[in-house]
Image (cartoon, rainbow, N blue to C red; front, side):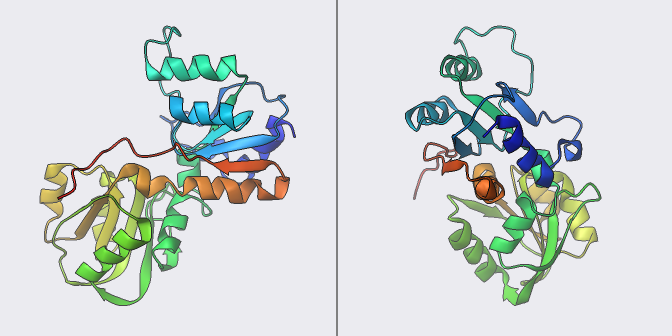
Length: 254
């Protein structure tokens, strides 16, 4: 099918008009008139992911994180980004991304993450649709809830602060870098807030006020691939979830 038809399917759920001003969702490389028979779904576009697309004979990569945020001044293989552009063009592979527009819609990243954790009464955390807040079916011990997150999301690490109350029921979350919503989660009565990429002083400010739970950025958003697969299933186009897509963060195991 034509690439523009695939884009229409994605944007019927996550319209580009829903993205943040600073974002660059949409076409990264390619021609919307290109014929597509196989698609590789990924969180990040890396040289390894492009190599996998070549191996699987995929004409399109659909990613959550955009490849291009800033203009390239040279395309001569000096950076991973430039090598990706070269590889994609050489092998006639198009790249399309849906980032904050997939974060902020009801069928998107944050709702899916909340559902994975078993939350009910799910609604957006912020006015722009970002984040989510909901309730556990019944109150849970904080330590037990952290263990649930670890097992459900298969986390490589979890960093956390003390909650205001050791019993957790209302949970807020934001896939990716969502420290900006910590105070909003507190204002909305959340007992715990799950996100990624928190800084030391953000932990310090949250300690004893809310159970701030920080996990790997990629792990908090890798289910974007499942959402893309579900969106594209009715089209009949062949979809593969990338096996080369993985977090770049390595952890020393004790």
